[in-house]
Amino acid sequence: MTNIVILTGAGISAESGLGTFRDEGGLWAQHRIEDVATPEGFARNPQLVHDFYNARRAQAAKAKPNAAHVALAKLEQNLDGEVLIVTQNVDSLHEKAGSKNVLHMHGALNKACCAACDLRWDAPMVMSPSDPCAGCDTPATRPEVVWFGEMPFHMEEIGLALSKADVFVSIGTSGEVYPAANFVAEADHFGAHTIELNLEPSAGASRFSECRFGPASSIVPKWVE
Ligand code: BJW
Image (cartoon, rainbow, N blue to C red; front, side, top):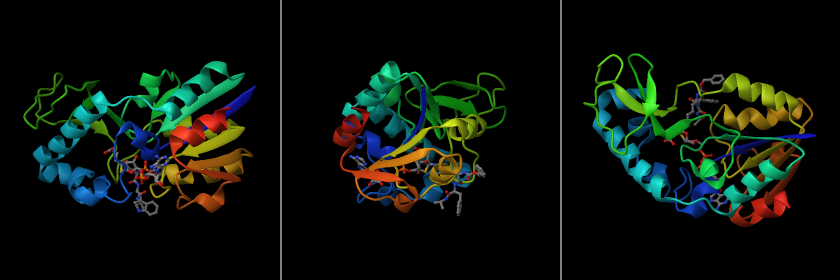
């Protein structure tokens, strides 16, 4: 029985046509983080933030999983052991590929929540600042995603999984955003073999026991074999 924890980031979905954040021409070259990915930005201009997420929701709805997502789903089906995918991505490409054991630590584009009462529901394709909450009627609905300064989801469950992992694999993430960037250190502390699969060395590459570089659609299926 092998326990594998896999952290994924925007790079795994790049070849499905979804832009990354920090690569050249990525989302943060086109939008100011302070405006679209902080609670303060949302309070200042909720329409701008909804426009940003409405556009990404429409794009993600059309995207198809690539060979990397498919390889991870097959790994979960065939492994004598457990595979947990902890994704920082808000798209649903792991689920579309067939993965079942997936935690969205930075939320999901297809979920909405109320900033006033915390009710959650399936997001419509287009959200607007005037949408009233179905529970408390306050027009404070927002995408259920994690912005800077907010606590990522499922942290307890992730911590427990990292403490039991035999292997920790990080795929397509720059290692610049915490707490995800620290998972390699946590897994290593508990004795896991740690592997980075990325287009190029990430900010934390030296912390891994093993690194393989190249596009996810080719290096992930090769690693799974
Ligand atoms: C390919 C490829 C191909 C390309 N194949 N690879 C100082 C020190 C430490 C922490 C902090 C600090 N100051 C502030 C903080 C905290 C802050 C933080 O980390 N800031 C840093 C910028 C320094 N973090 C937070 O605020 C977090 N909350 C928090 O810390 O709460 C307190 C807490 C305390 C204790 C325990 C736990 C918590 C919240 C972070 C929220 C991040 N939110 C976003 C937006 C989510 C919604 C949305 O999608 O819009 O999450 S920002 C954005 O970055 C998004 C991503 O999930 C995240 C990571 O990006 P990712 O996935 O790594 O993408 P890129 O673009 O950076 O990298 C892509 C990689 O793929 C590159 O390496 C490419 O080479 C590669 N690639 N094509 C393979 N084809």
